[in-house]
Image (cartoon, rainbow, N blue to C red; front, side):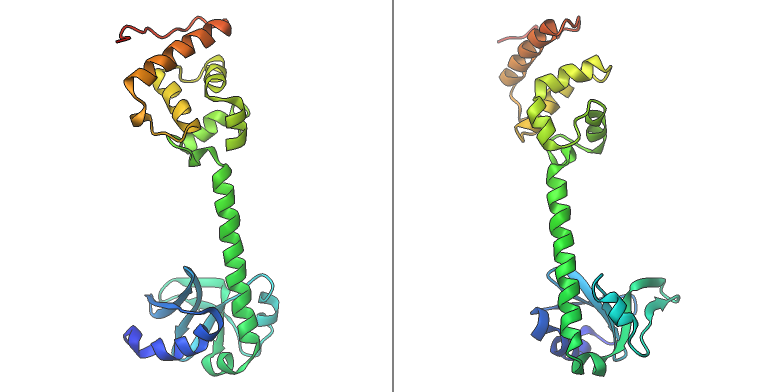
Amino acid sequence: MQPIQAVEKPISTLFEPIVGKVKIKTYFSYYAVFANGFMLALYKNNMVFLRASTNSKAEIQQLEGTYPLQDHDVGINTKNFYAMSYKFALETPKFSIWLTSILEELTNQQRLEEEKRKTQVRSLANMNIKMERILKRINIKNVEQFRQKGYMNTFIELIKQGSDRSDMMLFRLHGAIHQKSIYHITHKERLELLKEANQALYNAGLRHRFDITDED
């Protein structure tokens, strides 16, 4: 396999006028072409294997001589990368449209995934997928619902459901709401939270109480 420098010029000539600066990395026995962090194509032996978008896939599949990339020697088997000669890719005006289409699709997918992650409880401080599942049991399915419920009401509801009633659970919930690591909650803050929890437990008619022995 040639060094990247040997294929840098033809790859840059094809891709950079369309998507700007690209990065080239080895990928098994291929050269992977990246733009904005997305792998858009593979290159090998004057063949371009372009990643097809949802909108362009049908059109690319109809090209004479094209085929999905399958290389059993290195374990590549994909229905999204399609072969075309470098010469064809360089000469057809369609290549620019196809390349722009897949870059836009991947960018939009990333944006949607990031927006979704922001709504997930696991994205908050002290939270993880296990905590996210625990909160779903009391019908808290996203960050907004958690904030509306509040850390104390959530804690009380969890106790009613038979979940963890430890002080650490309380601190985790409080920290998550305030985007504060449990390890950064001071001793004084913890005592105040325990006092608040005891009052909330009393108001809810629950027998559980925290033993607060150090208030100094």
